[in-house]
Structures are given as C-alpha cells and as structure tokens.
Image (spheres, rainbow, N blue to C red):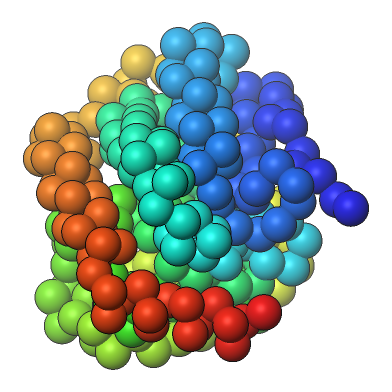
Length: 248
C-alpha cells in the first residue's frame, strides 16, 4: 500500500501532495484537516515563499471521499475540515502553484481555482460533476469560476459537467501553461522564479490582484451550507449510493 508523501521544502518552495493519507487520489476529512494545517504553518514560515500543489503519479485528484458523503456520522467533522481548508486557501498570503498530471475531478479541480498558476501535462483532464451528483460547487468557485472562465464558460463547465481536455482548459483560462514533459518540474522552475522576487513587493502585488478575500470566505460558508443540506436529501443520497456502487 502506498502512503501520502509529507510536504517537502525545496529551497523556498513547499511541495504539498493532494491525496488521502493512505495513498488514494481523493480527499477525506483527515486530508482536508492536514492540508489546512500545512497551509496554516506555511503562512507564517518565512522560509516558505511559494507553495506547489501536486497529485499522485498520473492523477492529480479524483475528488472527495464518497464513503464520507454517505456516512452521516462523519458529516460534521467533514464539513468543518472542508470549511477550514478552503478558508485557509482563500486567505493564504503567498503564491500557490499547481502541477496537474492526469485527472482533476470535483474538489480536485475546484482547488485549482485558488491557485495563481496551473501547469498541466498534455494528457490532463478536468471535470466538476457536482450537479450530476445532486450537489453544488465548493471552494467559492461560484465566484471564482465566472471570474476566470466567464459566465458562459463557467455555466457549461459546472452545469453540463463535461470533461475538459487540457487545451480547452487552457483556452478557458483554467490552465495557464501546458507542458509536454514534467508538469512538476515546470512548476518548480516557476516557483523558483517567484521565490527570487522581492518578497514584500510580490506578496503585496498578489494581495492587490486577489482583492477582498472576505467575500470568498462568505461564499465558501454559503456553498458548504447548501452542500450539507444536499447530503441530507434522500434523492441525493440514493444518487450518490448508485454512483458509489458503479465506481466500486
């Protein structure tokens, strides 16, 4: 069995792996809590100037852990962990880059909207099937997606739930750079470039570009509330159970 790699500090770049701690390409409540803790620590660590998010080999992240959606005893802890992680990501003061190699699905895709740059390998794909599951988007993407993709692009992506290839993702603005080689190597190179910049000027410029993050936090709370309500709906639960059986 493979296990979740620990965060690695390369110079001034912290490399963080998006996965469960037992080596699955999904995020469960423990993974959300761990990511939130990592970002909390990185925010106040002067040695960390840039964070790079990566997935497991050949797959960035397949989304949330369905077993927790279907287990009401885990909902309270799950919702708290998800909220803390995305609030931390929304307010994180330093540049965040993502290197995507393979599939980015659900929360594995919405997390990318908080990244300042997304570098993807040629075969990467992107999908947000929340509506198909009877759920709503998370991570304040109801604000961030229209800003990045335009309303029409965001509507098609989220409401139709189609899979985007990497070229379409770049054309819409979700992906900033496509590479034929290693997305992680390219992301680390970009991170080194950023880490060499005057720190105060870089952080202040990023903060100005980001704008009012309080609006994002309020939207995160609202989306999570709607998400939690959906998990209490019988029709949604039956749909999720059917999808889980098909995926098993």
